[in-house]
Image (tube, rainbow, N blue to C red; front, side):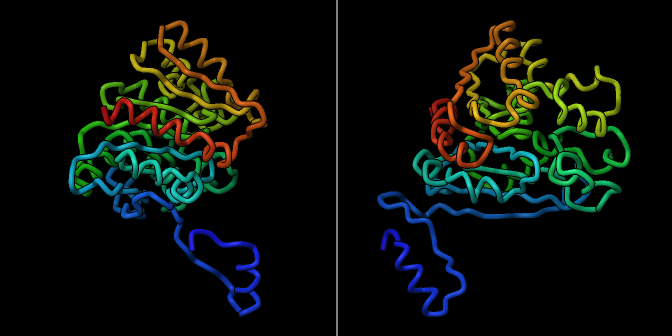
Length: 299
């Protein structure tokens, strides 16, 4: 059976089934890839960190590139793997997908769950310098150094080429990582990114809490400022829904567009009527992003 109908599920309920667990049916596609979820003792974060990896069918028989995905506020290492539907095309293209958690989860710190946009699930992909966060919230170094080292060791063979993308807070993180270290990341894209973290409420709150009140220290974690200061030589793909309720106050893609124009950085900013901030939006355009990265990573 390739799919089920409502009648099938109603019959199962009548028969006493309380829950059903079934695989995704990818008719006509290789389903031998493996989705895994992992935990390890992190050097940078000085605690356990979690991440997910999708290994395409080609992995093991040949070296494959790695594409890192950074999730947004309140998400975990599971969110993208469960909601985005990226595995089918990653299997076709031969790309290994890696998604870390969005913050450390232990030890618990005072106030780490007081707000949904700071602390747990909201690490903002920075290396915190303010206590108590500085002891564990070193997400930039974790994502750019420690995690790639671990992936290279545990999931060989890899081609040595890697890209990065993300959503919302994670789109901010992906842009910052690539713009700060273009030699490390051959490709970058983002869904509805926080484009100028130093000039929006989410970013101002996070950067104050993690880095302190000196706004000059924030600029190295502001994608628009980084794009303005130095040209990124490859096209940045950004998708943004016009019906996104965070568009005007938090995301501000126009600031990224202005910055890229100033530095000559090629930007493909696509605005879509009717789309919001949800994973329905991501699932609609994720194939475009995977192909964007594949053109660079798999060529």
